[in-house]
Image 1 (tube, one colour):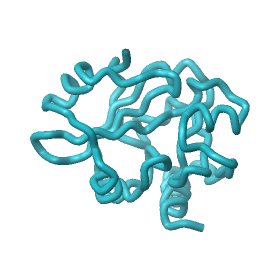
Image 2: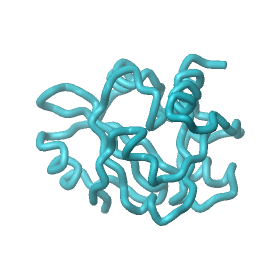
Image 3: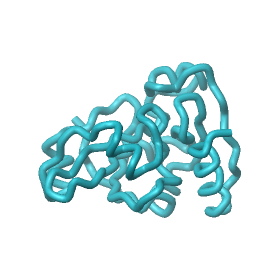
Image 4: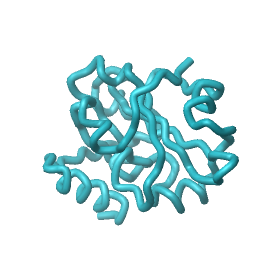
Length: 155
């Protein structure tokens, strides 16, 4: 089991949640994940990372699988210009590789916001630290688990 997957399972356990993780053939994209699980695209909680240009830190936007992050709205929420986060920044701050960034189990604290669209479902799925592993959770738990604030940042 990868270190990334172990961190996600440990974070779930620490929160008192089941650490059930599903392995699928491929879940690098929200569509692949939804197809693998047989769920709605918007039930996939995507972890979108930007680079905060002033601080140099990564910031996280958890969005429904079919939604796209609006750069202007995201920048307003972060209160600083945002740019593209490269693989090295993402790995250094979160401990995850692109395609497997989980909303929990990060190596370092991260500022985060979540898409209210996720609350339209009783269960959503998120990456569990690898491009092939997902876990299910009640989206109402996202603020407590991630520190994410509910906000409108999608197109």
